Length: 137
Length: 137
Length: 137
Length: 137
Image (tube, rainbow over all chains, first blue to last red):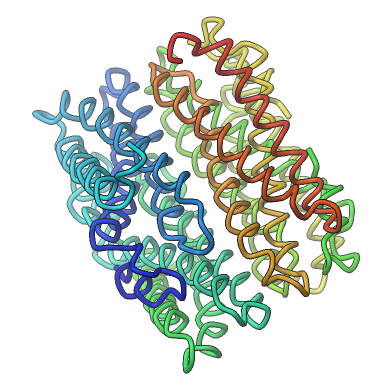
């Protein structure tokens, strides 16, 4: 992805987009894709009825990750309060979705991969919060 | 990104998601991020008034790329007609946005990088269309 | 919704946003909501396995309607080519989703309501195309 | 909109979607549209440079409202924790955007209308939180 390149050329980034935030944006887009694909793969399984809750958490997590990646990509003016809150929410959505996917990971390969993407994004949100929004906690 | 891994485990992918489509999904998410960031960077420039059209095409392209990446990540049942049409639209949105960004690329580094992401996504859409939806043309 | 009010105050609307386009924007947002809710209601049904294709077309239609409503709400500069193409795609997504939902409408009330929202949006896209983008056809 | 109709037919709504939540979903979609249109109208103004922060808060608020409306439209299984947190975030995004738009409301009609949509959505989120997620506070 071009995240690092494009954010480093922002006229107002003023160092606010450090490597933790950049890594987090990348993980958000990756996790949005994984959750979208996992929700759909669950839907294609014969035992979809057992996976309804997994589809639900994947769709919610995909929407939250996409919005978080989008908000965190903006540096103009300031809306740092919203970005910080969104990162907290995203960390939690990823944790919830990872826990649900991990329940099926042993026999559903797409759930295993999705859980991995969620855990990476959860951790990236936490690190971005620590390095960029420490005073909010 | 986990695109290749997660799509190859889909119960109904049946070979329909070849490497051209997978590469295209990755470029769509990357281009959505670049266009979001470039729209915002343009907005932060002193000469934003000259860049209003660029913000517009970037926002439209970001929305279209995000939706294309999402639709193309789904393989359950079939909605191939929609995926093919969306890829055609995305190819065109990327071309329009690349042309606009290239007009400012000499003095706006973020426009130069965004144009590059748009051109890569435009080409990836074209290749995915050729390999997956040839009969539609 | 505030669609008519807010678009009529746009500095560059120059009459380009007529009542057909305004009605279409409203139907796009309504249909995005109905399709999101219907996909989720199908997922909550005991016979979800029979409804997997319906969930798929509803999710795709929701994404396309949301993007169409967003693009059509922008009047700055010009990206009329993209708005016109998006409206054509949306008309088709709504038709496909309506046809799928109508197959279940007799015994799934949410599918009956969703099909109705899709048909209204399909017609609103067609009218907006006729009144605003006639030369493109 | 069809919100009330379609949610009342959900197999698992079990009374969880009361009128406050339904009203809130409608306001979220309306506010997403108003903020999208206001961001674009600001961008079309000659004095866009003074309005850059307003475009930023409008785009963020549009994204957050759209995601909140989508999440709150899902009732399958449970992800109530996420819906509650998202409503809190949305209430705050609407308040921030309303405050920014109100600064320009006297001479920018689209900002006046957008602020009104934001205030309505802010209040609808607060009421939906009180009636549905009281224990979370």
